[in-house]
Image (cartoon, rainbow, N blue to C red; front, side, top):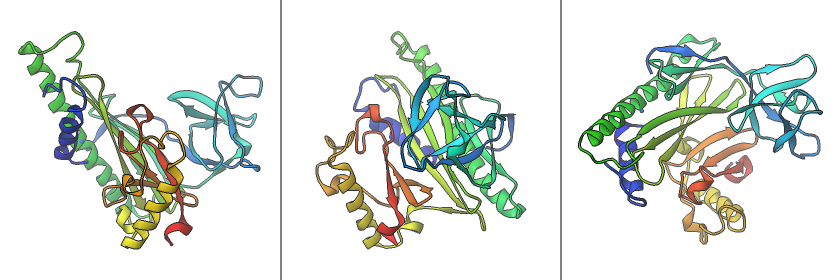
Length: 299
């Protein structure tokens, strides 16, 4: 996401709250690689997530059949280590379907722990690999510029005495999740979070979808290639939302669901998943709600 767009979002959203006082080249820190897998329970029932590698450990949640997970390691006893709500957790490996996707590793721009971004490897065509990595690096570089600006704003506001209590503890954090990686398509969803005073910060979700054969970054308009397809997806999403939490109090008519060139999405096994921004179709507390749309809706 370009710097100007992120800055505009910060200013416009902050009007909803109080006190707004005012996106990688090389990396020095790397984290372990992971594989992408999909939950494939035979009855489509949820898969238990446990605190340890065994059924004797406490269940701490569940994953829907068809959802994607990043697997960091597998035990000899049939369990896979994942991250669940940002914490280490385990699921039974026999209920996971693995794809031979590209290798994705986490980097931190200039060693800054708050600025995480992805880089890929293992693609046979080196030019394609470089193309994808350059796109992701450019995004990281832009995020760094925003990070510096927000840090500079914090210093100025502290110097000018415009801070009350913790109001000038400004921060800018980027992270990502690999949502699809089957060797032919790759979807990485980034989240850019900025706090510049007020009740809380604002996040912006941005998707990076690539065709592995040529490295092309796919936008929603490359998938929904006509107005009629856009309309079909809009109607599907509205019908899905209107009677479901957390949407039903925010989506009361079809026009409340805006599908356009800026709509974010990622691939799934059966089609695409739409990603909505904070406040767009639900409350701030609901984050970035998603709606999965089968290919049959827009084919």
